[in-house]
Image (tube, rainbow, N blue to C red; front, side, top):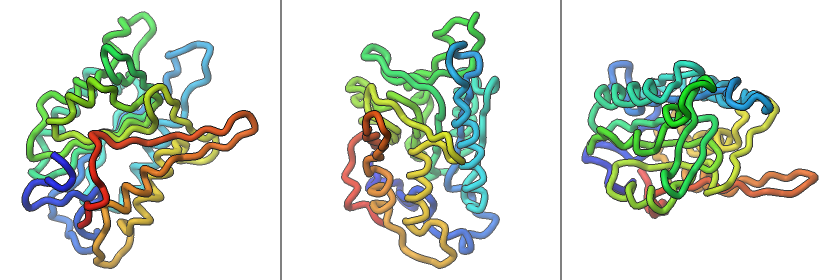
Length: 258
């Protein structure tokens, strides 16, 4: 399913087909967001806690609070276990109306292996089995519906689907937005929220595409993604680095408009 193949009666755009003031309070939620974030205080004793993800998800929740067509759920810290994420993901799917966009936003630590593909590290005590703490990409392919588009946002390092995962995604109703390419880090800033450079880009893309205006306008989804997919340049005194967000499976975005 491509963005051009959105189900009849629906819309491919990410922030709803109309502006908030034209929707009315009784409209079914068009976007269902499940956001997961951790600080990993017990993850690595020699590392600094990763404070950005939780603060960023709270920022995103506040940013989207004015959009009546968005339903927002969060799982933080010890609630963000592998089993709990899967349970909330499955429950969210059952609640979605046809043509709903279901967004799962993963913020924290990710890793990628040739054998297993992408995994998101969930909360766990160090005495627990590591395999029970890894949310594998295939865990989020179970029970998906043909009338609900899944938009998976991986705001972690090493988040791009590998060739095996890309093959499995081709026939699924799933779009994956990765903060970085394979074996690439996803940076966060120590300054004010949002810390994530991908989330900063997402916010700019939403505002630049007209999603937050109060007038009834036609929105270009291609514009949203073109802004979102621009390389993110990091300039420092040591070595400049370019972070490349990726959208997979590969799709022609230039023809996608509302």
